[in-house]
Image 1 (cartoon, one colour):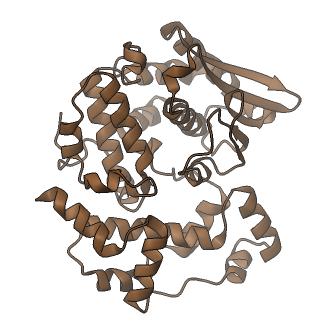
Image 2 (image 1 turned 30 degrees about the vertical axis):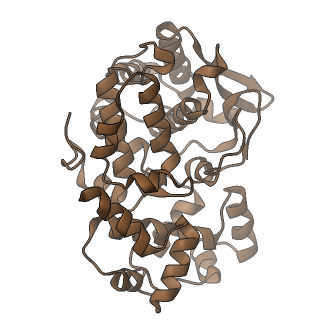
Length: 357
């Protein structure tokens, strides 16, 4: 296995650049580590490889660069020799299984047949986790069920699989599969806003099934990918399953593109953004609410993720980072960063530096 400080193998530079300014909830790191612990692995070497302070892992509101999470996931899959990380202590799918499934779904023709082929593939391999496509009125439902609920006691497996399926099926049809609802069986967690970022739709908790809901009409969408693009997709996995994809056509993604990455200039006002999207402020606000976000939250998320990257990966002073983030006063940046992460910029950087000593 490569060390945490190694360069990403075979991934493209554009994807890596996007990952550098994306973060994930620390929950996902801790859930992976707990899975490894249950599988009988000594997790300390994996924690040591992370370029993140152990103190940060103890803060449920903390976030880390997505590249660290991806490195950890790759190391754990290689260590367990199982893409399900020995869930319940049982080996299920060796590394490369997802790639075989992807090849099997390619010739299916449309989304419905691809989904069915994907689920036939996994239902043959895995006995106690069941995938199903069903229809109700004008809605299609992709659901995931465990024979033994204790296998997914923290709901991490269901959450991760639903994200992976949504990203993969969106890629197959060449556009984001627009969801009408996501159902999750667990209680609302501390990191529940993460689901809004990932799925861009209404999230319901304490549901009988873990499921993705979308309009049936999308089942007829043709498969737009081929063997050449599949090769590129698999080369970049799992990075492209963590970083928000380029074909994300949500309003959130469009607004992020309008804002750009240079925060030193004043953010465009909401009315200007609405005009750029040929919308009215009232309509745009309503649509953003449907995606589970707001203009202020989008701005805060972009600056938060960029600030975390610079604090972890640069020699810039905190005052210089504050300026890059568009704050005229360092004290304002300190207050904002603490609101976002629960730590001041200095405390966050100190915790990261201690890990490197």
